[in-house]
Length: 94
Image (cartoon, rainbow, N blue to C red; front, side, top):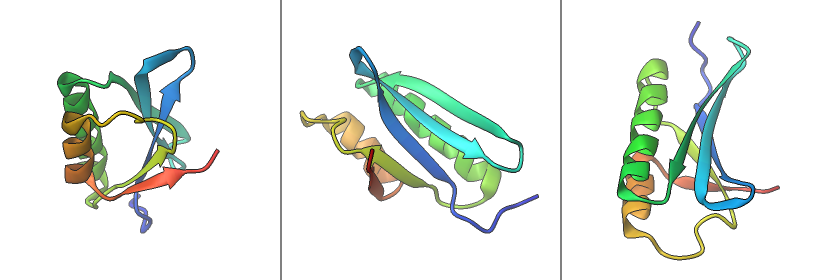
């Protein structure tokens, strides 16, 4: 069953580990949450990109990113480039 809503991936930090992040997607229909844990590296950016691509291809839609405001204080061009290629990030308010 396809939803008409835009799939949303939420990115938050891993408590106690400032170099690790969790990207998650909640499927209401399946009552399941899919997630990937990644680091702020090129390979972490690739893992995030593949995760977003998996969700996007499953739903046949561009995904929306919601990113916690305090996640990326230092510029990281690799992560920033991947985020920009996936979709327009929207902040998460905790």
